[in-house]
Structures are given as C-alpha cells and as structure tokens.
Amino acid sequence: MSCTVKIPDIKITGEKTALENQVMGEYAKIKEDAWMIASERGSGDIKITADRKDVVEAVRDREFFKDDINELKIKGFIGENQKGLVEVVDKDGLEESDKIFRENAYTVIEKENKARSLIMQRIIETDAKFNSAPDEVYESFFNMNITESPDKTFYRNKKGEWDRK
Image 1 (spheres, rainbow, N blue to C red):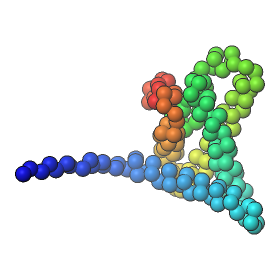
Image 2: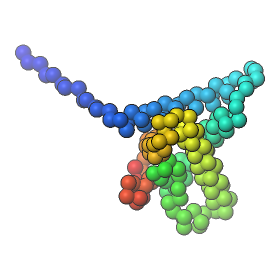
Image 3: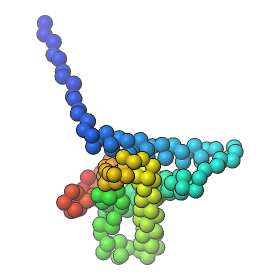
Image 4: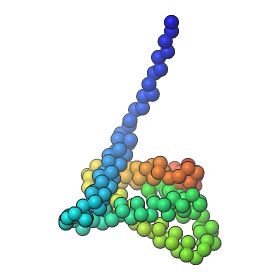
C-alpha cells in the first residue's frame, strides 16, 4: 500500500497585501452602506452626512455605469490606469465612432472617474495609515478593477505601456 500526500499551497501575505486588503475592506463597507441606504429609502428616513451621501452616490453611479464601462473596455476604447481610473486607449477609434456613442462614452468615463476618485479620496481621508500611503489606495483600486475587468481588456503596466489582461 502506498499513499500520496499533497502539500498544500502556502501563500505568504506581505504588508502591502495586508494594506490592500484593508483598502478593499473599507470599500466593501462603503458599498454595504450604499445598499443599506437604498433598501431603507422606502421604509423610513435615513439621515446621512453630506460627505457620506456623496460617496454612497458614487458607489451607485459605478454600479449604474458598470455595463457601459465593460462595453468600452471590450471594444478596446478604454483601459485601467495605475491610479485606479479608466483612461482612453484608442482615442482615434472613439473619435470615429457614432456621435451619440462617442458623447455618451466620454460622459460615462468622466462620471466613472469622478466616482472612483471620490471613493478613493474618502478611504484616504478616513484612515491615517492611508493618508501616508495614498499610492497604496490607488494601486489597490487598480488591482481590484483589473480583477473585475473582462478578459483581454487593456491596462497600463508598471512601465506605463498598454497591455492586455
């Protein structure tokens, strides 16, 4: 008789990954707040501060524009940059598109980036450890957005060049 023992995969989590996990945890809390407020609207009055309201609206905007953003990514017009924002990859192609499509695309890109910036800024402001490491917050959002992006979509690599997922 013989038996085979498979050694489990061991992953060592570095400080950076732990910080990324904290950033993603903060983002998850903000998303949860957005959904709780949305579900409570019909049943009662919820009082939230203006700064929280802006962040909640930003999360809802991101959800609203998700399909449009993915369509623009799949068509190769936009990609993820290292600052956690979307950026135009194929400006010529987008400019040659139908006028209504093009105008809508630029509006969606602007609103998506505004929402992302607001969320990231809120995370940076709410915790002192993020105040001293804002680039970690941007990188965490970059990694999260890449993970959520459809296959074969563009992103800027560490050298600043466009690459495909």
